[in-house]
Image 1 (tube, rainbow, N blue to C red):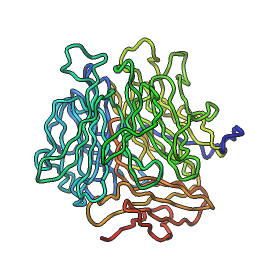
Image 2 (cartoon, helix red, strand yellow):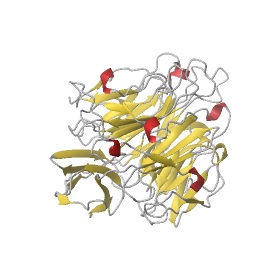
Image 3 (tube, one colour):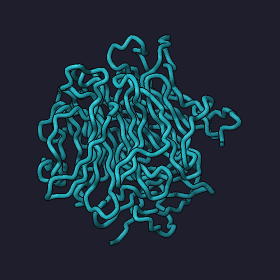
Image 4 (cartoon, rainbow, N blue to C red):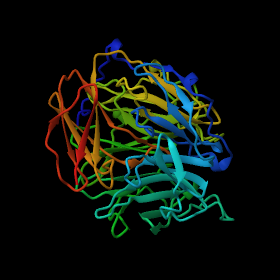
Length: 497
C-alpha cells in the first residue's frame, strides 16, 4: 500500500484547490424542504439534456417543487443557469439520469415519498411521463435510493428502488424498515419485479462489478437509526437474486456510497458515509478491509469549530479536483435535523489525495467549508474548462454552486464510451486510461451517492502528462484497442453492434 509509511507532503501553494461562490448564477434559491419524511434524501441529478455538452441540474425539492436548471455557462466563465420547464413534481427525494430506452436522450428516474416516476427525455430538455408506458409498478413507498444496470441478454435496464421506513406501519418508525424492489423493465409489458426483504432502511445502492469478473452485484447501504438491531450492509447477486455468501455483516448508519480505484490496482474501493466514522474499505479482490485511520478519510468529527460531537455524512464522491492524476474525495455533512447526539455545525469535507496516497483536509482553504444541513452533491465540470465544479444540496437552506478556479498547469481528459444499441451509455463498462506510466481505472455506473448521481463523460486528471491512451472493457467482456486521447478535451469511443 502506498500509505504504509505516512509522510505528509504539502502541495505547492499554486496547486491548492480554490472555489468561488456562483450561487448567484441560479435563477432562484432552491431549497430541499419538508418534515420528517424529508430528513433524508435531497439529491441532485447532473446530465446534458439538450446536447450542448453543458450539464443541467435536476434538484429534488422535498415538500417544495423539484426544479430543472438549464446550463447557460460560457466556457471557462461564471456558472449561470436558467429555469427549465418540467412537469410539477413535489415530494421528490432524489433523481438519477440514465438512458432507459437507449434512444440517445437521457431520462430521469425520479424518487418520491409516494409513487416513483420515470421521465422520458424527448431532447431539448423536454420530458414526458413514461412510468406507465415502460411498465413501472405504481407504489406508495418512501424511496430513498436507486441504482441500475443492464443484465446480459436484456435490452432494457434492471432498476433497484431502495425504500426507507414503511410510513403505513402503525408501530413505526423504529424497526419499521420497508422492503425494497428490483424491477426488470420489459415494455410494453408490465415490469418483472422481485422484493428484497427484509429491508434495513436503504439510503444508497450501487450495482458494481467490484471484483472485475464481469458479474455486477448489488450493494446496499442501510441506516441503523431505524433498523435498530439485526441490520447490516448488504450485497446481492443476481439471477437468481440471493445474498452474497460469507458477506461480513457490518452495521453502519449508512447514508451514501462512493466507489473508485484509489490504490492503482484496478479494483474499486468503496466509501460509505455514516453518523460518526466515514468508512473507506480497500478492495482486496475477494473481500474488503477497512482503511487504516492514518489514511485520513474517517472524517468522524467537524474539522472546524468547537462542536466535538460526531459528524453525519451523506453524499460522498471521488473526483480529481486539482487534476494531478489522483482522485480526491468530497463528503457532504449535516445534522439529520436537531439530533443532539451529533454535531449541528458540521462543515463539508474536501479531502485532497497527497502524493503518498493519504488524504488531507482542504475544504476551508478551498472556501467551501459551509456548515448547512447538506445532503446530496455532485462534482462535475459545469463550464467545460476541465476543472471539476461543485453542487451541494441543503436541507432547509439554499442549494450551493461552487466554481473551481484552481490555478495549475495540470492536464485532463474526458472519456465517453457509447454503445450503438441498447445500454447506449455503456453502463457496466470499465475505462482504463494510462499516462506517465500509471493506469487509472473507472467503472461506468448508475447509482451510489445520496439520492442523486451524474451521467456525464468520465473525467481524468493527467498532471503533467502531455499524452495518454485509453481502452474500454465493454459490458460483454470485449476489449477495445488502446488509442490516444484528446488532451484537455473529450474522447468518445463507440462500440458498434
